[in-house]
Length: 362
Image (cartoon, rainbow, N blue to C red):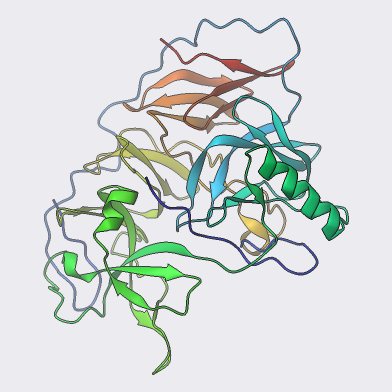
């Protein structure tokens, strides 16, 4: 079970600041490597199947504009949470349990996210809220078994990178000894890989190549990603010492123990298997997380990632229409719905009269 260790610092005004194969790394790096097993095009077009035989329920559905996976700030890239969703209505966001029970009303300007050190929800209403009311609401959540509200503080989070300054690194191939773990939010330092982390995050890790930065005598930290010859910024390294990448990947997300993971190329996303083979076309849109004011001041709530698979499925969106992808890259629910939400336990599908809880396809 992976850890949840990251909390974001919140301003006093209660505004949230978001909080196998060698690669070519450039000069001094390997100049020859086996050709990747991936290609720019998938080997076959993913097929779709008929939508589940679920008729709309008689009663109106949940009235939300959007239901989105919770972004958990315990690592970079962020990880998806299970058991809850964040939902929006009239541009404001709240929190609900996976079964549809409202936990926090839609009053936050940003999608509700989670920092896991104390099981805290990052939710701050757009209108002013006194600390006494905030604390009372947090206590109500705790009493109901729904965690508590994040008051705003520093925290921890895990990041993995390939250290181009690693002493004695083999520059002719990927060298597992150069894998580094950086604990964000601490005065710590760049650390050698802790083998227990493979168990928490899975045996394939999203990483980027970087040089160490930091003034002499100060803690070191990884610099900006160093792209490879294809312009890829992120790639995957495996516990067995192998590695793979997708040409041009601007972001890669977690496998954990699933069969596929989402990879961003340009402004779209596709899914690759555990050998790096492209399983779907690069045609999907981001569906969860939020860009934040720094990355997208015009639309801070814009989603940041395509969905990681959770218990074998991922909600996907293309052309503004939603569906459900399985572990083979098949749209078992075609992208022809107003909305689909899945966090690993409960499936919601949006119809004209709202969101309805639906069974997974047989």
